View 1 (cartoon, rainbow, N blue to C red):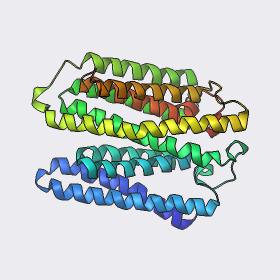
View 2 (cartoon, rainbow, N blue to C red):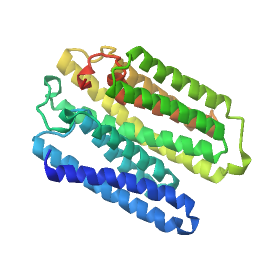
View 3 (spheres, rainbow, N blue to C red):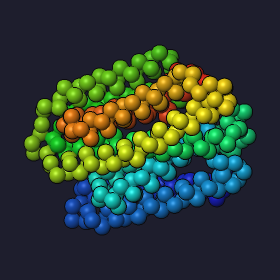
View 4 (spheres, one colour):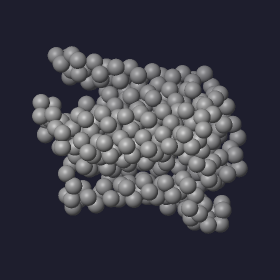
Length: 330
């Protein structure tokens, strides 16, 4: 990795951390909030530009499309998350989502920085990835994951704005357990069954607890107008992410037929991608036909976020195996 590319990547990571703290500070200093939001958005935009240049530079240096290992996938995810937030903020003015979006990007930068040096260095492609299908199949998936994360984060905001505080904390606990399981699976030799149980049962318990708490409303913190805005933002993010995931699954089947002679093999990661697709198809159906309240739909977006996390990172870090296990670095 060249010094320029490293400097650009570090600039993007530092920008995400700085924008996070400025967004958080804007909630504490109401008098200066408009100015601080503008500063935070500007800093995030600088980070987005720097990361764009870093990704392009990595591709030029590697003489290939720069998406071939976990580290590069994390860079793309942070890029897509930051860019998608800037688009949504300009379209809907959801600046309260800014600190969550910047925190997500920062956490993925940190996660990537802790990966082994071999992931950071540019190396020849493994045989399974030497195909033109890689640049057709993978980018839509990564971008869909980013949109689904923002939809899930909007779901958190919607629940908070509607006064479902207990439900929010229950979902935060579920997400924290899931992220901890992935971190332990990535950087330690913890038993895979323990990690899988932590992710699956922690997610189920958290979401079910949140569903049970939906009727408990803190009227003092309820803001129906904001809740409706975040519900709309989540829906718009999913309507962008869902076609991208569909494209990713279809092109994945075409690549699989080219590489393995079959369009679908019920590989664990393939199956999980299908489950994720079905969850968002169900969300769109329920949202369009107004068959659920907004708070229930927010729980669906958070479930989708957990499924997306499992599809994106869980199968390699939690030891599920399968044909996609070449992405595991340990």
